[in-house]
Image (cartoon, rainbow, N blue to C red; front, side, top):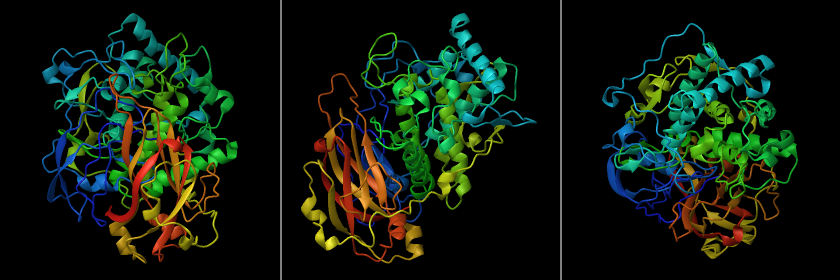
Length: 594
């Protein structure tokens, strides 16, 4: 959900078996586009049905976008790690060049950091010992004393922009870190580096906030200072934190969607560009439903949560569940409307929060990512197979940052796995989404699948201009718990095509008739959503047809609706935006190893 795919690369995959450990995978789901990252290239990967960390069979596959709706990353989870892969090294600052505005021209200024005196001798960072943890508080609950301190810290950081523009601790220089890593400024292995849509997402942003937080504390001479986290996973935090709405303060940013965030409006964690026409209570209910699906239902395995492996020369891209939702929709909800006029003039490309290059210019960015970082801890606390990745290619990936004393350092992923070891923790807040599994059913009993057309008569589907229900056969019934532990049941839509310059969204339901209220997601039958935002990658691009595959994990849903013994089930597609321009080549249900 809330995913955008590149439009000109056609999916090619040799994996078509109904029991393959690698499900079909399209091009990476991307909300924010990254300049020139559109070329197709070949990579070699190893695949195994037996263990997601062991790989025995070599295949050649295209670089591809794996679309994560409320479904999973099962295909990619088994495609890698690659036996011949090399972890991403710290970027070479000598090669840092001009970044590209997503969907727009080059960034009008350099996003590259100041170069250290000796680029070849940048040391590795060692986390200093601490006697007292910095404790991050929920943003909606902080007091005036804290807000004053936070404003002072950001003010001092902004002042550095005026007195010493090249100071790496300055506000704009800190924002440029995100721009450089995310909008094509760095080249590694002959390709542009991108820390989104892969397993680099969580550790990069954790390190980023770690140093940002320490810089703020140093500027106000308070080593205990901690960033707040925007607690959007709890009803009390589902609004823009009030401290960021105070005009004239260092925390205010005029380049926001003032209409969406006005008067304490409740946010939509599944935002797709249009305002959902429902009550605030229902929005909160929808948000908790989405959180449950993203943290529990669709993230039982590490690679589903963290995203696809990203290694030197072999970067198959796909975001993890939380990166996809709610991370991306929050960026959309806060940023200005694309195509509108920016304060001070100029056409909006989603600034500030709605575009990677400018997101760090809004102080709320770091508050938002504070909660994203917290979700990493909360996800592991759920238990089961939810634990950090063990692949060396992930653990040994590196980034470059300046510390609070303007010293340059390289850091490794392996050193950021424990927040307490890093010297900070999160003030506890309830997580109501953990017990928010949708139980309310729209349909009593089993839908009469005999009254529905089979999938073979519905697909190929020329356009999705109305609710469409069909029946489809499953590959197995009455599976044991061991069977379910070994393989996830996946509902896959192939060959989804649409004009990638348009807003797109459709929802998917199981065992429901056509009479569904799409603004109420808290139903057991709700399987997930596919969303796309307008995205044209290059000024000279003439082909605007996206061609993607969309997967949803349905094992838990089948259990909840007592459909495990059914050979045939009912599926309903509900267009929300741009359905008349959506066509779908086919649909299938198969089994894939977790």
